[in-house]
Picture 1 (cartoon, rainbow, N blue to C red):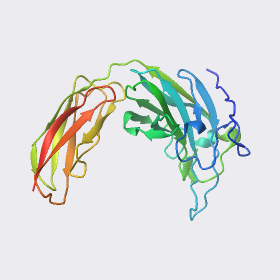
Picture 2: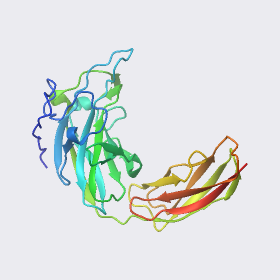
Picture 3: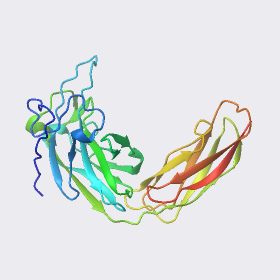
Picture 4: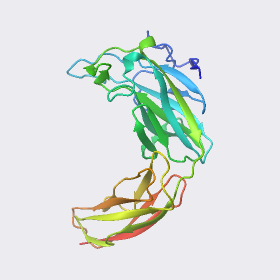
Length: 273
């Protein structure tokens, strides 16, 4: 599929040498829909890295962030992929051009990070759990110390044709399991302890695996770890770390896990004095 060169909105001048990057803002470190290039699901869009040298000692970041946005119809998984890139960007190697970081786009155009629903299959691709309908954003970036072809670590200016790359977004209808049960090895522990638990799913995880959302009614008292369900797995372990500060009384904390579309399942842990 041929890359689509996008039309520049009225957002100010594009830095010299950064065409075809129409959305290149100054200091683009925070997601905003106004600077995120729209990508039609099933289509592609072309942008360009515009990275300035960053000599040591560092006084400013040498990396470049580019943002994208797409609309999810709901009930499907999504893949964002760097389909092509200029040779200077070091695609597919650590420190080179990378993709990831998922955001839910808020009504005011800002983004709320929901990285826990992305799976890092590689440096140039991400997939998501099933997403509810709505608008989402993601980013591409280069590291401050970028690895270039030949495994050379360098900081250089990358812009124009050398920094051009193409991104595509695809969607898939897949069956994603929900959380069936959450259990703990012990439902009563003394403060300062860590207790192990198990999350049992309604079925195996899809290709690429999936992250689960954790919640605690009091994270200061008992904080559950994140959980990643590997591809094909139907259960996964987790740990709950309790406060090291002695509580004034025994405290009951509800620990929950969920997917993006399921109903959360919970277990109650009592943290004793």
